[in-house]
Structure formats: structure tokens, C-alpha cells
Image: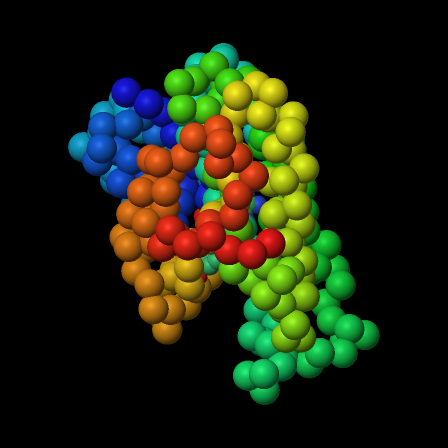
Length: 240
Ligand SMILES: NC(=O)c1ccc[n+]([C@@H]2O[C@H](COP(=O)([O-])OP(=O)(O)OC[C@H]3O[C@@H](n4cnc5c(N)ncnc54)[C@H](OP(=O)(O)O)[C@@H]3O)[C@@H](O)[C@H]2O)c1
């Protein structure tokens, strides 16, 4: 059976990705910052037994990433999902009337933190696990982006940190594409839709089950010819 590795697996979309792939009989390598307190994730082991491994991994911690890679010792990873991410809680945009568009008032320190977590860390993780992906049958890397990362669709002010981080992640998807393609690895950017998680909040229209089922359907049908593409979870392509 294939193996998936996901970051930020203890809650939200990461947890649901693990749940659905385990249900399909896959093996899951679930990475999160605090395995000890990841009750919902650890509870999945009941039905999965040794098909679920939970690892401590802060995506900003190079040593923890290297330790997971060392433990896996070259084992194949069919599907690597760079899911962990953070968002700025700085209003939702000027149009909603609760954000200040003035860049001098922005939280620049948090902006750096968001870029580190949402762009630099996924790059570090691909570097650490590309050999495992290349050793697998499916050879797929999914970058959990957002519709808010679309440069073409953006003019509204605000959410500068999150938007630039996801646009940066999109660029990473494209710019690592050539290197990975030479190893027969497909990489795509995928937006899960506005989904009810801690990050998405309770007003989001999409349930995690629906978002993940939609993303799985896309992952199922991708081939190397699709590498470097940008998807919404409902199967629509998004403009970069
Ligand atoms: N929900 C939406 O509407 C939506 C829309 C578009 C894109 N997305 C993207 O989907 C992804 C998952 O979001 P979600 O909605 O599932 O959010 P969530 O429920 O807030 O979960 C975020 C996950 O990321 C983890 N994380 C954050 N920083 C980390 C770090 N430094 N190292 C390791 N793990 C870290 C969190 O772990 P802790 O519990 O340790 O904090 C948590 O597991 C994110 O990349 C997000 O940008 C979500």
C-alpha cells in the first residue's frame, strides 16, 4: 500500500488527510509539533495499528526534520503534503472594514515568521524528503496553498503576510518543478477552499471531510504532465 507524509497532522486539514488515507488502507507518516498532546491523531492508531507513525516535527526545526528523514531511512513516500501553515490574524482585508492597509502599521516581525513557516519550511522539507518521494511509485508532492495566494486574483489590500507567503509557496511549486520533473516527481499547488478549521474559522462554508475528499480526487488523477499546476479542491484550476 502507498505511503503519505503530512506536516501539521494533529488538527484541521492535516488530521483529516491522515484519517482519510488510513481509511483507504494507506500508511501514514504524520508529523506534528506536539505528538504527546495530539489526541485526535493518536486516536487514529486504534484502527490503523502500525500503518500510522507519528513524529515530532516543527517545520521550522531543521534538526527535527533531519531526525524524521533519518528514521525513515530512504523508505518510499508516495505523497508528500506540505500542509502546516499559519495565518495573520490582522483583519480580513480593507473591503471588510477591519484591516488597516497602511504598511507602516503592519506587524513586520510576524510577516517574517509567516514567510518562514509557509514558504521556507516547505522548501526545507522537500529537500529532506525528495529522495523518499523519488523512491516511491506515485511520486507526488502537494503544496497546501490558498486562493489568497493567487497574484492574478489579488488587488484587495490587507492580509499581506499570508498572501505573500502563499504566493511565495506557489512560486516555489513552479521553480522547484524543473528539478523535480527530472526525477519524475510531480509537484502541484492546491487550495483546500475556505474550510472550517481553527485557521478557517466557524463561518467557512466547506467541511474538512469535503475539502480533503476533493483534494484526494485531484491527487488520484494527476500525472507528471500536470506538474507545476495550481488547483482548487473542487477540481477547478486557479490562475497564478
Ligand atoms: N482552512 C482554510 O480555510 C484554509 C484555506 C486555504 C488554505 N489553508 C491552508 O491549509 C493548511 C492547513 O490549515 P488548516 O485550515 O488545517 O489550519 P489549522 O487547523 O490551524 O492547522 C494548522 C496546522 O499547522 C500546524 N503548524 C503551524 N505551524 C507549524 C510549525 N511551525 N510546525 C509544524 N506544524 C505547524 C499546526 O500545528 P499546531 O497545532 O502545533 O499549531 C496545525 O497542525 C495551511 O497551510 C493553510 O494555510 C487553509
